[in-house]
Image (cartoon, rainbow, N blue to C red; front, side, top):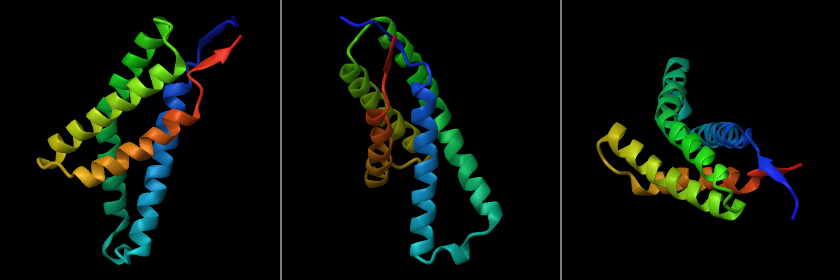
Length: 127
């Protein structure tokens, strides 16, 4: 059996990839739907700040569970599936808290966009 250690950059890579692609896709949708003429730069900055604050509690919980599961030497697939489940629940809770209404479609889209980088990167690195 080969030795491996936790890829400590995994949570950061997942979060940065999600953050980058989420905002790029959101901006593209706004531009394609011609909603951009109603937005100012101040609105765009508030939008980024809002979703950064929305994701901050999720990434903290994500980091805690990542460390917990990598120290228990679970398989990569188990860790990824558990982190996806935690992230989906976190996104739904955060959306409900911030919007006071649950937008199921939007929460599922955001969850799917977060699941992609979770599956792409390696949880463990080979030694």
